[in-house]
Length: 199
Image (cartoon, rainbow, N blue to C red; front, side, top):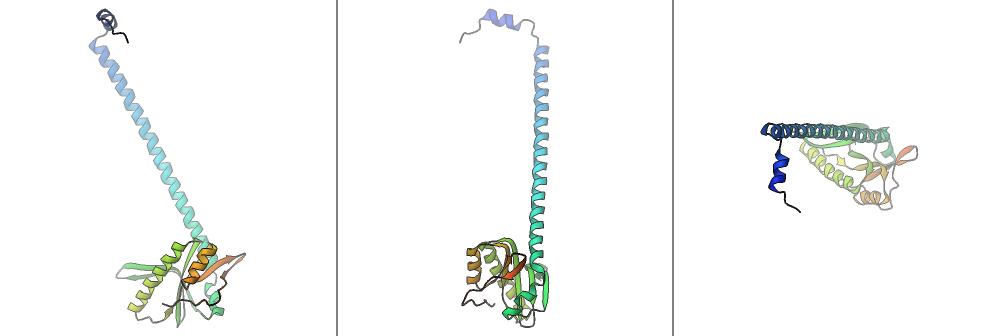
């Protein structure tokens, strides 16, 4: 690379004044500020679009969950009559709280004078959902004990989609499983030797 000679540098500097250099720097600075403002505005639009999309997806998930719950809700209590649980009452989104602190919530709560049954409903039932429901039942049992409620507690999970391994897992844990069967909902076939767990 050739070095600029003093004569070439002098020629290049001809006509340049401090004011001209200053104006050029200020124009560059202004262009940089405007570019940054456009970038910031674009970023804000992207963030707003992402927030809106998240709300829409969340709303869709909630709607799908409510639809699944509605599918299982119709006279849910009658489905257990033939299994020896003549429930007389069905509550929706039952909350169990103590000292203004929510301990547990069941999508549905079936009950009679001898038994109570919390039911957890998922669009796509998973092993994790089963485990969480077992924990929920334990908390409800503690709540009932604190309030002198000695009824037996049995549990049920339900799903619009229930894989074979999740079905077997839930039944091994002593839970009833409700599944969609064509146009209806039914208690899944109970395997030989199944005994509902009681809390």
